[in-house]
Length: 324
Image (cartoon, rainbow, N blue to C red; front, side, top):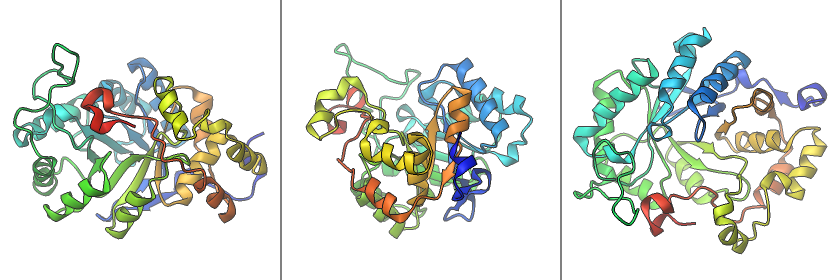
């Protein structure tokens, strides 16, 4: 028995949107496609669209844009009904590389526009065909010109203003300092910022900053899946296991006769964030497409679980500055 059958505070996720500063609407729940094999992604996207999802999130570095594009074409859902996002990868941060990178994503996705184009990270890598250029020690090779993310953003701004290829532009994985600096050196306020957000990592500082500047927040990794590689570092922050097994999360889930996943998705929406949940399993995709109206005391209880614990780190890619 699901929460949609037993609880009166369940919203129709197909009808829940947030308004962006451009006047466009972003669906509250999206399907994420990170770390999924192309054929699995294709089936997952088709299943999600069939269930009513209208927000699909991918990125160049995911290496599955072809599969996502094919799934959308085969789904029968009009492209105009889908909020499709992708992300500029770090090897294309030089101004002259931004438009070609976007064009390549559009070609793979089999569309002539994106609803949102994010700058994936505020870090520039060496340009070239390799998405993750590495030196002999296996370390990522930075752009020799050290291209500033503000310069990259200015190139994205021009595409946004001068073409119809992107309807909104945003940033991902920025700090308050980086976002503030971006705003002070550009004309276009990002429509959204995408961040890892869950009760163990609530990021109140940047959420408040974004709200103050009219920037929508979109949450990824809402379930805070524990990466065994960082188990010891996370333990130092008080993370002892999976977020879905936290007693507070489980107690709230029991109250609403819901799954922990449904509670964690609904928590983000209660905070005013859209949320990207990733799965390739039909039952889980269906389960995640649920919005429960949480009582305010439950939102507070989940917020109090914050440990400033980031589960997804780019330390391996960009170096110790992006460590946990």
